[in-house]
Length: 342
Image (cartoon, rainbow, N blue to C red; front, top):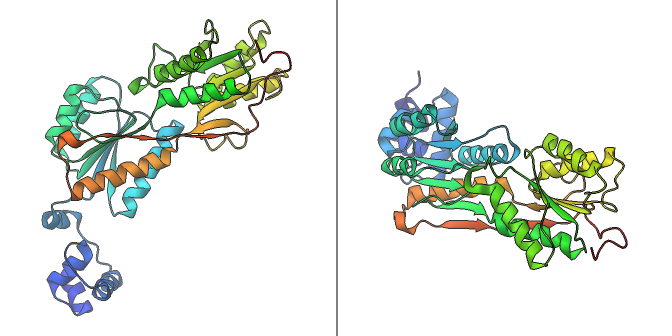
């Protein structure tokens, strides 16, 4: 097995210089660093993470807790986090966090507490006060995505404002017969995303003095969820709206497929708008509010690593609310002639 002494001898530098060059800690000229790296590569030397940890106090590993790994938003964030960490020379340990259960408790009380991490990123997880306290006791930087966490810098979008903007877009086109199709109010995502998007929708409708009775339907935030509910809602001409605000792009895409099967033209007979910026939105020409999950993941990593270099006091932590942007495509237009006044 190759040793750091062999690397130093081949690069014609002191052992301590070789160590600094490979660990990234301490000053070494770029010319010397390149020579040391080339020597290490030549003899197949790999820096021991444990040895580097003893020198730097860093594990070069970040723990990530996340409720889902198969849903589009979470998968996008996770892939972005992993890429950003790898670019900075960090590994990632992932914990797929279940709902309240003994298994979830073990993640906080055993894995996160006893394994060594330089920091933790919480993605879309609404933590209990006990869980927050566990994480603070680790004395490691923590960054959240999705909603507020006490004493922790977080990154999120304003779900209420985003939903209201989507609704106002439909209203501005002249629609009055608008419904919102979103997540169940009894089966909330963390940070009450379902409720916030319904609240934003209702706020936009009431501000425009448009009736809001019988204007909400619940389904799973998936393409099949939108498709099956769409066939039910759109298949009855007595309650068919002229426009739908879907709580996710996947619901919206399912609705568009259902409308096509029923012979309903989008957008001349039905306008559809979603939230997300899903990669399939372009293919379905879907008007949407993009929330850029990959950007959220990268910002979380940048925030965590910055906190590692210059820790901020707990009481200075704040939430960063990111802008969403309206992308108008051909799934929305004015309602059919004669229906714009309701």
